[in-house]
Length: 270
Ligand SMILES: [Zn+2]
Image (cartoon, rainbow, N blue to C red):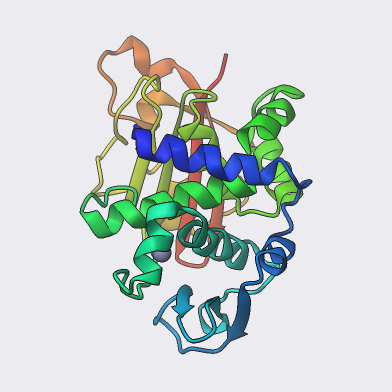
């Protein structure tokens, strides 16, 4: 659920995005705002991005940490820059930065965070998502084709964002009923579903990835032959269902594996 505050945040980001074309040229925005951008190696696991206000010369600095895999033009670095621009553009973030009230922080996406620090972080994430994937443009692109994973993959390349960022954007904008699952070493790290998705959790909850899902095949057998594809799966194999009849409902799963991690998008077959 978006709060009024984050609706304002998203509106602000979309208004900025209106002035540019896709993929949103973040470096141009940073230059136009006369922000100093420093891309350097700040050590692994420290932070992705950092925004600092320097009182001496009345200047904002954005530091991008290459050591964590951020680059000026890769999807991770671009989301980090979008997030840092959120701290710069959102009024109460900027005021906190100028007054030294915002502590330097590392941001790791956590959809369940709810304390004040996380609210600030989520606002910056929402800003980044709205800036990089402005809904007024994205919804037009989505409507050109039937919804599927290949299309989301292609759109993520066009907008120069990650597949997961694009899928989360579609879910949060309630484009179509879907569930997203991110797992590490065969364990669910987080899971999101749109409010109109018929199921709330995976078959075994958070404990184990369902064996007969594409993700399950990947973790259990190292088999990625069905990954990167719109694969048909059955509700009874993947989700905690509420009736026998539901078990035969067909869904699609598009799974993206990477080493010991995997991300899957589920949506219903019509
Ligand atoms: Zn942040």
